[in-house]
Image 1 (cartoon, rainbow over the protein chains, first blue to last red):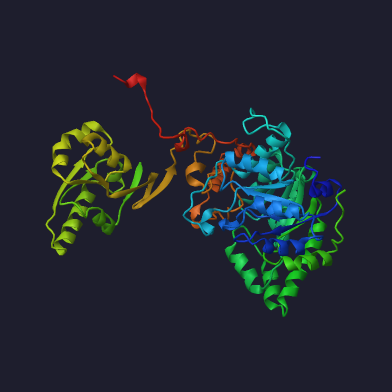
Image 2 (tube, rainbow over the protein chains, first blue to last red; image 1 turned 180 degrees about the vertical axis):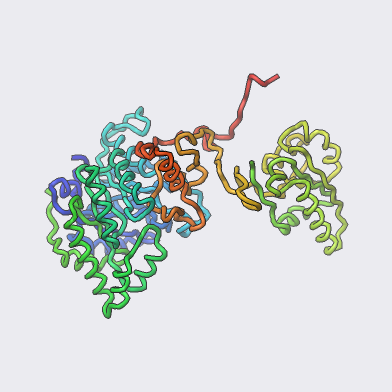
Length: 307
Length: 223
C-alpha cells in the first residue's frame, strides 16, 4: 500500500469510488468546515480540500485537511505550485503527512489574476507534473527532490492530479495524462463533465494507450443550480463546455434545483458505463447539502468500507 | 531589445518638484528604437514640461541631451560637465541607464527615471512590442520549438499546456496567446510532437534573478 488510505484501498479493491469537495472558509471559522463535512460524511470516500482555488484567500488546505482528519474523515489535500517553491512544497508535505493526510492532488493552480490578491507575485518554481515527480521521489525513494537528502521518516501518500479533457489542443490532452502517469500519478480527477461525447472520445484515447489500467480515473461532475448558472459557467469558466441541450433543460425547468440534481444523476449513470472510469469526483461547489441525495439517487450508497 | 514606456507626465512632474535645473537625458539604443526615450521623446517631454511649468508660472531651466547609450561609461563621460550643471538628471533610458549614469557621475548626482522598463521584446508591428525573453540565464529554446514558455506562459510551465488553454488562448486573458499551443502547433508542423511526450525536469533557477544579482566576466576580452 502506498498510503493506507481509504481512497486507495477502495480503488485497489476495484470498487467504484466517490470523492467530494470542500472549499475552506474565507477565514478561520471551523464551523463552516464542520457543516460542509457533515453533508459529505458517509456519502463520499474522500474529500478534496481546495488550495486557495481561483486564487481567493481561504484557510490553508493543510490546516483544513488536518481538521477533517480530527473529524475522522479522509481528506485529499490539494496543493498548487502557484504559491510555494520546492522548499515550501516539500516542507508542507512533511507536515501534512505528519498530521495524518494520506492523499495529495498535485496542481499548478489558477493564475492569481482571478483572485482577490491580484497584485501578488506568483511562484511557479515547478509545475504540476514536476510536483507529481517530487512527491513520488519523496515517497518511493525516501529522498528530497534532487535525490541526495534522505528523509527522516516515511512519506505515505496516494498521488493524484487533474485532467481537463475539454481544454485545447484536444489531441494533446491524452498525452498530458500519459505524462502524469509517467511522473507517477496514482489517480486522476477530471474537470467537470457536461460534454459527454467529448469525454467519451477522450476516454477512448486513454484506453488506446492503456492508461486506464495504470491510473484510476475519477470523472468530475458538478450539479447545476439554475439556468443562469449553466449559462454563466458555459460562458465564463475556463475549460468548461456545456452543451446547449443541458443549458436548455436547466433554463426550461420549473424546478431547476431538482432538474440539476436529475441531470447530475443521469451523468453519473452514463459515466459508470464507460470502461476505465473508476469513480466520480462530485464537486458540489457551495452546495454540499445536495451531495447526499445525488449519491443516493445515483445508487452509490452505502459506501464500501475501506478495510 | 529592452522595451520601455514613458511614465505619465503627472508622475514625472511630481518627481521633479524640488528641482530647478533639469537635464533630460535620452538614450540612443533600445528606448530610441521602441520610441520611449530617444532624442525625439526627449524633445517631446521637454516641451510638455516647459508648457506645464509656464502654466504654473514657475521658472525652471530644462536642458536636453541624448547619448549613444547610457549603459556604457565611454558615452556618459563626455556629458559629465553638462550633468554636473543640473540639479537633477531625468533619464529616459531603461533602468540600467538610470543607474549607470548615477554610478559614473558619482554619489551627489540625482538621476530619476522617466521611463518604466517593461521587458525584452520584439517589435511586432508599428506601435506594438511584445515580450519574448525573460533573461532566465539558461536558454531552453532548443527544447521548446523556439518559443519561450518562461517569458510567454503565465505560469512559466515547462510541461504545458495546462487545463486553462482554450482555443489557442491563455486563461488569464482572451487576448493572450497560449505559448504551449504555439509550441504544440509548431512541433506538429515539424512532425516532432513526440518531443512533448518526455517530462521536462525541474528548472535550475540559479542562473536567473533568483540566484542573486548576475554578472558576466569574460577573461578573454579583459585588458
